[in-house]
Image (cartoon, rainbow, N blue to C red):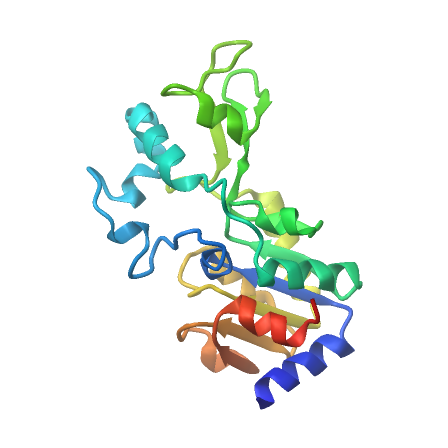
Length: 241
């Protein structure tokens, strides 16, 4: 396939690649996509997931929030897939400068990636809202209902960005700089509809913008290379794992 050969060549020639990924990177590891046909948004709950995962719902119905969060947002059985492994290898080879992700599962780090910018936080980190002590995901899962700090009794909140909350400005600025300076920008597994994260790619100034997704995105016409397919399958064909 000509597009795959072009991507392989661009990767071989570059040492300044940046990857921007969304939910499609994680679905290949068995983590449900919020907006897909069979994703969390199409399952039946007392409240829509978008409502449950909001800051106001977290404050007003904390117990219900954690019931959903523990059942649906923490996927302990998920393991890195070909996409995670390919990106980690590219970083180890000195080609990939950073992974910018909208996912919160920590699978990029588990695969070996080191420079990972998590725009929406991570389920791996949780902190006491009162004394700021950090806890791992096991602490959340083992809590009977609402997880409370074992030192001060404050509520332990997941370090993830909920609806109605702003993104971390430091992480956003760092991601912007990586994208601005990139030679090759590979975007994979995202519909590019979630803002402000999706707006970051407008800062790319190069001429090797690659879009890899199962379906069309609003940015396809602006891309220099569009490949339709699963991100893990595509990357495994151009990166020798």
